[in-house]
Image (cartoon, rainbow, N blue to C red; front, top):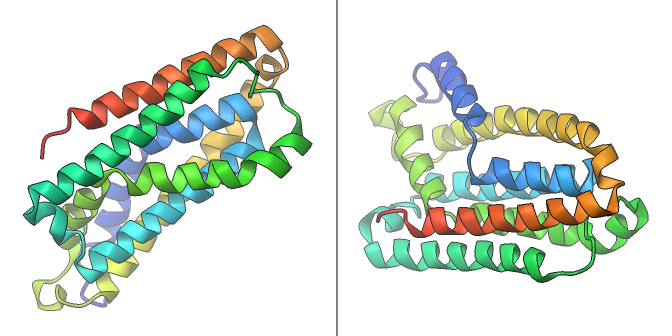
Length: 210
C-alpha cells in the first residue's frame, strides 16, 4: 500500500514509542498539571504541529542535513537547549503564581504562548528529526523511498496515535491536580518544580551526542 510495508507492525511500534516519556510528554504534563485542561490541550496542539513539520521535513529529505552535518545538528541542538533553559529559568524567577486556574486569564493571555512553546520545544529538538528519518524508512519499500507519500502517511499515522495518547494524559493529569492548582502555596511550588524540569530537559539535550 503506497510502498508501505508491515503497516500494522508500524502502528504497534508507534504506540509503544508514544507511550515512552520524552521531552514532549514532559512539556504536556507540566502544562496540564500547572495550568489545567485547556492549557494542556494547547500544548498538545503545539507539539503535534511540530511533529507534522518534522514529518514534512523527513518526507522532503531536509532531515538528512542533520545526519550529514555535525554543525547543523549542533546549531539546532544549542537553540533547543537555550529555549528550554529560558523557559525553566523564567518559571524559577517569576514570583507570581502562573498556575492559578483563572480560565479567562489563560484564555486571553497564555494560550497562544503555550501553543508556540510547544511547537518550538518540538522543532528545536534535533533528535526528533533524526528519529523520523531513521524510523520511518524501515517500513517503506526501497523502490518507493524516493517519494514523499509513504513518509507522509507513516508520519501522520504516528502523530495520530501520539495525539490520542497525549490528549488522554491532559485529561487525566489536569483532572487529578485540579485541587492542587487552587492552593496558592502548592501552585508556586509546582511552578518552581516545573522550571527545574525544563532546565533538566535542556541539560539532557545539551549532553546529546552528534
